[in-house]
Image 1 (cartoon, one colour):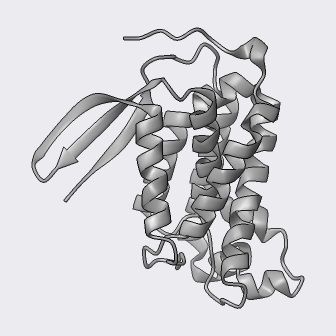
Image 2 (tube, rainbow, N blue to C red):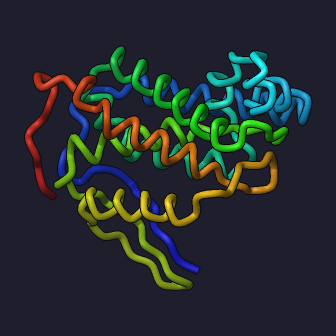
Amino acid sequence: MGGFIPLGDASRPPTRFAVVTILIIVLNAWMFMKELAYGDRFIWVWSAVPIRIIHGHAWITLLTSMFMHASWMHIICNMIYLWAFGREIENAMGPFRFAVFYLIGGIVAMSAQILGDPFSRIPALGASGAIAAVMGAFLITFPRDRIKTFVFFLIFFRITLIPAALLIGFWFLMQVLNLGTVAQVRTGGVAYLAHIGGFLFGIATARLFVSPQRMTYRRFS
């Protein structure tokens, strides 16, 4: 068993306080506490169920579902990725633009998942689609930056620097290869189509949101 965990941009440390990124993490944590407290009924009401959406019901869940998670591992992994990539993109866009970008990216990602399986009755939830949009924007904005990454295989592990283009490109390739699996509440399923939709949105729109005046010089460590 092996994998990697991105820890942050080693080439471009954040120069501003990432208030929106932190607020998103806090909101995700708060919603997860609500899920634990109120159980499956809360999840059913506020997650995105494709068949409800295509019949014109509960459209608000396109928004609320991106702040919900199926398990502790689900939310922890997503928040690690958001922290690793979100701070620099927020710095590059500015707090307001980043918040708008994140929310639209999440809605586009969830819509892609729903369109891929419109008659499903399985609740879809998670921040990973919106975070995929952030990763797509990072790839376009800082492709040559090096990402401090925790790499592990069985009992061996190390922290190394990996080019953003290579790390994010490999992640996206894995989403494409695994396309077809639909997220399921509390079963560990993954909405790969949402990841792909969010990622492509990030790539396509990043330059519309990034402010050149807020870009920082690269500083290698």
